[in-house]
Image 1 (cartoon, each protein chain N blue to C red):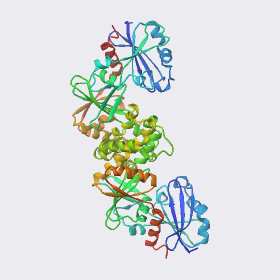
Image 2: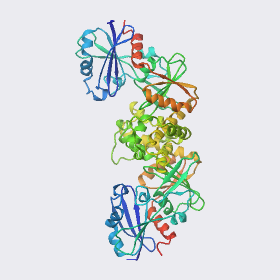
Image 3: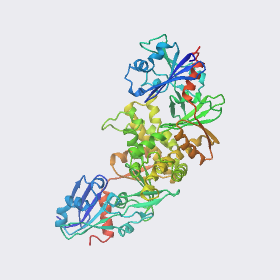
Image 4: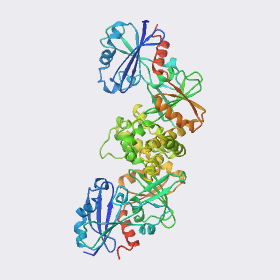
Length: 308
Length: 308
């Protein structure tokens, strides 16, 4: 076994994932636990970390870096948002150090990666935490746009040196969940586990969302009338609504300027759905499948001199 | 007591409200029960009606008219949507008759008011059921616009003869409920029962929604960042979000054409909130406080010759 050089923690809302990396940044071992930030009581972050990674810390004298919600106000210690435009080396110099209580070896601290913030043309603030590390690890082309689909989808505009120039959050994933699980639209729908994408219904939704994005809270009502009027059967309505929401998101984001291509970074099935929606806008997409978070953590640790 | 002339049923999703009217259309008595359409088992509509209004039906030989969700596919009998533009007398001639099983007197039928449907410029269908009766009863000026705030807010464009030319549904009320009760935005909020409208936070929200309505699923995220960044305390965030949603709705609806004034028809505190938002667009509003539903039912029954 090559010598370990870094412990990288992806510590989000629901899970704690730990990776032991060698001196080339390659993963040696993985551990994970359901001890997400929301489940850790105040003052118990050291104990949660030791419960999962205690043996590693006892055995190896390596640095520990962490990204995700662990750096939020509800996390272990707040790592204040870095303003955009932001560069990797700026983030590396803004790592926030927190002490591991009861550390079993010579490693005494965790270095937490700061999130990013920016302001749009209307003065509206936006934030990300965790995604910045993925972005830096993804090896994105300069002057490009990257979309990270999810509960809160992020559109990210990158500058000439790979810096994050600006970004926008769209609550698309959460809205789909709320509308279908708790709302009136969901009452006319049936959900078929593992069903293939209904491309006809989805494409019609994308087209409607694209035309109607400026009228959002009206346009989504089409998912009700399409059911009432018998345009789509109950099992086709979820993909119709999904299309409306993605078409709206893309049309809204393109108000920043037209695009020929974007990178898609995240869960593969969801990225493929975005790729299908983007194709209706004649936008090509490249799906990035590499483990971007760990790669980004490695790059940040290198830039901060933690692995020397 | 003047002679009764009509039983008018406002039979919605949650409640059944019945009014006994005299020959001048004035209310003589009111009854209500929590037997909304969602709570009545198929085949039990006659029984539900008789449980509430049996004594009236035994005593008076009067017609019965009903409006609301009772005419939906999930209701007693479907009263198909009338296409727009629609006039009161057309609705009066499209009442759908359903038999009261076990009727104790000489009245044998209920006459159900049809809902309305229309299509917008994008070919998107829209529907209303129940609100059309309120509209006809409200005595609205010709060539005017009426807003009915609520779970699903309706914007209604009226023609020269009081006909309903077109309308648009905005899911504003439901979205506010979903986002605050089940969503991430609600987690940063506290809700103070009976608190007065926080006009500063609300107005700032309206301004943001107005500017950002074409970017809806991004703009609402401001209610999270405003909390994270400490711009508003937890108890001020609900009014900020409410303002964003109303400002967006109004800005979206005005894409149909600018307006100087609208009528507001519905729950008074909610209408007052809309009036406050509309004032930022320099739109005057008239709050209609009369019992429009019963008045509309009376007018329809008259036009259909049910009270002769």
